[in-house]
Image (cartoon, rainbow, N blue to C red; front, side):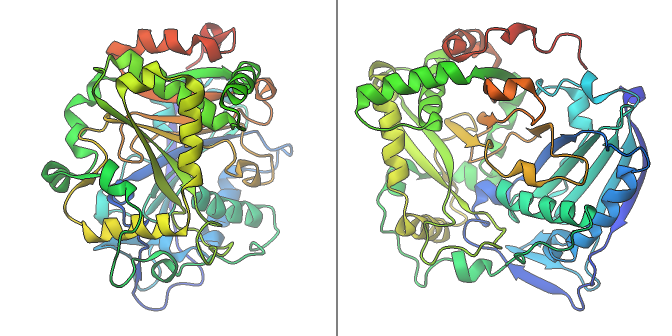
Length: 455
């Protein structure tokens, strides 16, 4: 493992122009949700080799990121008491520069448990004491590049992180700053109302207050069971999903999206594999972008958290017994109920019960969490030698769950892109055989042969 990766040095990046005075920037109500506030999120992107041998990504990237930090000053700060504190002078962001003796083609980007993948991104941070952002760039023997990123989730979600990376990519290509400037205004646009009020009744039904969660956070209570988790990749066939979607849409008499169908299918598969008792209430949650649903809509330059959790709850018996079309329709209905009042009520619910341990279920595996990364604008992150060939999550704490499910695209040059997409999922080792059996209906035929011989 040590021979596969060698760290050259760490560059300290400073925003330019520098922050003239200490600044304490308030977070929005979505940023301050403890499901988000307690998380440093780590991601990894693989890029092809530059077509010009004279171009060294390890020289280009530091300059590009330093320029982008001049627009995203808060990323050089640290979290403290519900604010982002940017010190006088602007703070610094570490960028680790490394090289590897192997080629990108030898790296198994379909293995979410790979120890090598984990070493290609900055490790988890030190909570409020650490910088909000850390980066790592690794150049491979073939010339390809891996870009690892760790960012405090309280500052941005996947969409916001992509805005920052896309800005750095523009600077790398010599195109200057983005046409739309970044916007902060977190508290003004998505802060709690005064006084807070909860109009949407759903949250009283699906969320509870738990003293243990109040003490340890939404993920801390699940620490003891994490060694029992496994992380797996499933290769889903677009043709099989489309066939299922058409059949379920016909049964339900409504249009259904791929996400609604796949989420319904995997939620049921997980609950069946888990062996939940018929009377046990099981919940699923997914993130939904509300940028254009709130009133007024968020400005295009807003880069804070823009997703709210949306919940669906049934008993295990109901979920297993009901037609899959009915479950997919229920997910669609939950999406249609998200409006400006839903968002404001969720923010106010969090504000009213801050410190009381808001949770959808005790233990990080109590809720099936879903997030869809297939359309996050990954292609906009092009530093001059092509968009990413793979985009991977390295963190597994989202939406109050330690057993999430990610829907991921194949890279632009991956021939599988036209035939399907990847699903990364975390689940208990003991239920994996049953879950695999349930998933067979959706998978590409060569599932078992894809990762043979890779690191």
